[in-house]
Each structure stands twice: as structure tokens, then as C-alpha cells.
Length: 470
Image 1 (cartoon, rainbow, N blue to C red):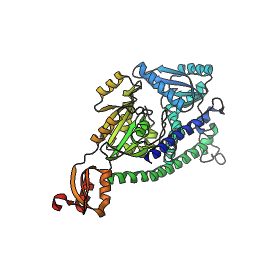
Image 2 (cartoon, one colour):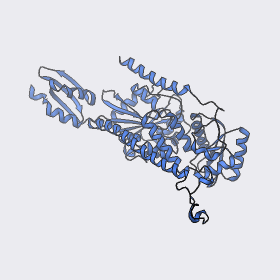
Image 3 (spheres, helix red, strand yellow):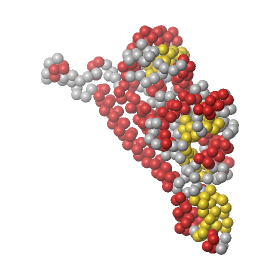
Image 4 (tube, helix red, strand yellow):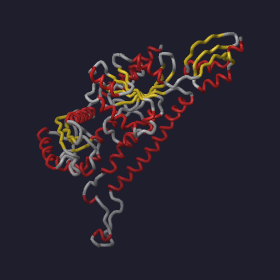
């Protein structure tokens, strides 16, 4: 029966993957607006793109890895990458991000390749976006907008969709532009040239009306997310009250977190070789080799320069990390820069109150594809590591044994006679404790186990020490 259930769950993940791959964007079938000033008012439609980055620090390899990741992000969003350019500067140009001369060169590249979108590897100020668009004459978006678009595609739950919409509106608000000079400001009185009565403006302009509506929508979304996070808080409180240990899987996007969750619990969540394949957190029950119950949660993946709007919007989800007893920090051992992945994730941890205080184990995943020199390098740098392959199962038994050792200790050992009318306590012991032996006698059940404090107190009240009985 259990095997059939697990099979059905795996099929559910397969169906999610099939559904995602069923409809893909078709290049060339999009209606582009002639007025690029309207780009913020329509959904992103990425087809043929040119990437551009500014290399300000680090090595050339670091800059190329960053642009390679931007390419993967763009392809995940459904676009075809035609070219990629990196500009070496001390800091991004405050006007056009890459400088006026390079902007003209970029325009020539766009014209020669037939691209309809330029994606910049960074978060651009509203003025930079506007001036770069005016120069290259096609739509320009930045890394933040690209990641938000991917999140919008992949969010499935009601809470996830609300969180993504809130993040998008936070990003959009300072970037709104008028649809023409006549709507750019209010006029009236002396501002209208001194014409007085009859020359006053319409009051609230179109752009101000849009801003007010966005702020109202953001306030409503915050209330909705607050209400939806209540149920998550309630479930978390129930686990804490019963002292079921919690493990959180965190890490860089596409490091294999969902695959590891499936391998450990048979959860059957969607697995895809793509960035941000799963956004909605999944909490499943699992047992240690000794039979002790714990929960394991798969969290949203992180990325370099994860937009702060997303960190803020997904705060209720990310709290799963801060409330865990143990963090499994999954890193892709086959990635060109695994140290950069570790640093990017810990940068987000620093923004989550309490996350940095939780015990962390670095899980080097994809061992079947990783270079042994890279694994040795990470192992030397990190204090606590374990090497696994979620695909083949290599190292997973050792990981489960490590989880067993790292979970909160069962400090109280009991040897009690529990009456048969308190079978609920015996059931809890099997779920939450480490049961050494169970013996059924005439007066009840003799339980020998190591338990947590809350269960110990209830057993003490309900049971009798075995030595008093015999």
C-alpha cells in the first residue's frame, strides 16, 4: 500500500513537469509596442535576447560565470540567447549602465542579430533603463525583472502567487512612467503660465492614479499573505509543541534540493533541470535509521543578487529555515563556482532573523558528476560536509545517520509501565522518541525508551516505574 502511494506521488511530480513543458513560448509570435516607454505596463515577453554585464570586481572567470548564469535564467524564462557582452568598468555608468559609447555598440549588436530584448546583469535604476532603451531602441530589462518573471511563471500555490505579485509591484512602483509628456505632471495656477481659472490641471494624473492603485494592491496582498502565513505558523507551532525535530533543505537554485527531498522521503515533488523549478515550500515527514520522526522542508532556491523584493515577499516561507533544528545546505558539486553559491545563500541567510544561528551541514550534491578536486576543495574549506548524489542515492544513508546524530538529543530515558488506557502515549513514543523495547503485560505496556522533555513529563504522570511493579 505504501509503495503504491509513493508511486502515485512520484507520478504527481512527473505530471507537474509534463504540464510545465506542454506549452512553451514560440519565437516570433509576439506583438511588440512601438513606444518603448510603455514597456513597464505589459507582461514580459522574452524571445530573442542579447545579454550585457558590467565586470567591476573579481576575475574574468567570475564575470563569465555570472553572465552564464544570466543565460540560464533567460532560457528558463523562455528566451533564445543570441549574444553576450561584458564591459570592464570600475562601476556601472549612472546614465546608461555600460557607458554611452558602449551603448551605441550594443545598439549595433542588437540590429545585426535581430534581437528584441536586452537583459542587463544587475538591477538598473529607472533612469538607466529609460536612457538605455532610448539608445538601443528595443526593450531593456534587468536581472531583477527577469527573476521576477520566472517566479511568476512557476508559482502555483495561492500564497506563492501572492508573494510573487507583491514582489513585482514593489519593483514596478518606482519605475512607472507617464504615457506621454501631457501626463507627466499636474498643472494649474501659476504653473500653467498664470492663466488662473480654467488653466488648472485635472488633479490626480494618470501616473499618480496608477501609483495609488499599486500601493492599495500591495497593502491588500500583504494582508492576504499575513493571513495565509497563519496556517503555516499554526502547523509549525504544532510541530514545535510536540517537539518533532525540523530539518530545512536550503541552497542555490538547481542544486538538487527537491531531488534530495524525494530521495529521503519519497515526496514526489516536481524535479526539473532548470533554475527555480519549484517555488512552493514542501514539508514532509521522514524517519531516521533508528525510527525517530522528523520533518524535512524544501525551501525556495536562492541565486546571486536575489532581489530584495523577493526576500521580503517570501519572508514567511523563508522562516522555515530560521525555525529549523538543522539546515542541510545543498550545493551543486558539478557547478563551476560552488563557493560562490555557498556565499550567495549565506548572504540571504543573513537577512533572515535567526537563520545564521541554526546548525548547518553542507551537502555536496551531484557527486556522480562532480570533479573530485572540487569536492576536496569544498571539504577543506567547510567545517561540516557530506557528499551525496540524490540521483543515484550515493551517500544518502550516511546523510540520514548524520541527521540522526545532529537532531536534538533525547536526554530522558524511561522504563515505565503505561496503562492500556494511555495507548496514545505509547503511540507518541513510537513517533517522537527512540523506542528501545516494548513489552505487553497484564497491567499495561512496559516502555523502555529515550524521549524528549514534554513526553517524559506526561509519561511520568501516567506510568509507574517498573521496579515498583515487580
